[in-house]
Length: 199
Image (cartoon, rainbow, N blue to C red; front, side):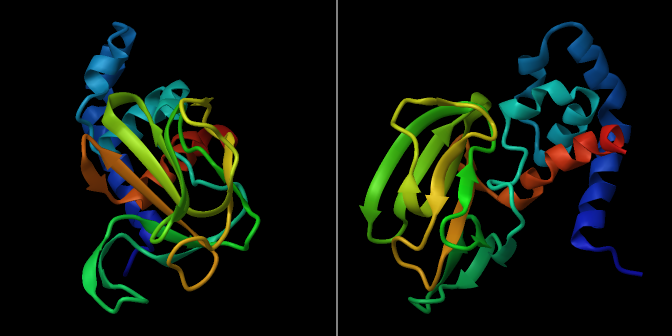
């Protein structure tokens, strides 16, 4: 029997809850949240958010759009569709129709706004707590200014096909302390943390 990717992710999240529930609940009750959030991987972070969903907006924990879009290229080593060179794809590509609203995946500050990059096109980089940064590339239009404060769910741009692309899509990436991470598991954190409360 094989688990779907979503169910497999849920299995790991549940395991993380089982292992960390007591420790983190005690930590949060002592008002030392940020100290204990440092260095957590995505599974551990999901476990903490399950206990205290109020911290969800502080970290990348949702999809970077509100409508449904499909993954056209995952994180990892791949052959570039245009250059035909094998290299690390340091994010996830979501195929989305031109003109879709792109949203910030966590509270933060707009670190950088760039227009007309030959590779990534128009893009926005947002800095968050604990060394997290999120990147949104190939936008048609940018809706924020540098140094602006954004809240999770705020529209920061409109999807398009700027830069070196084969069609309209969003390139979404997460970096923590200078290290590239697979963004897709982070997209499911809020869904997992809130699922019991929505049923």
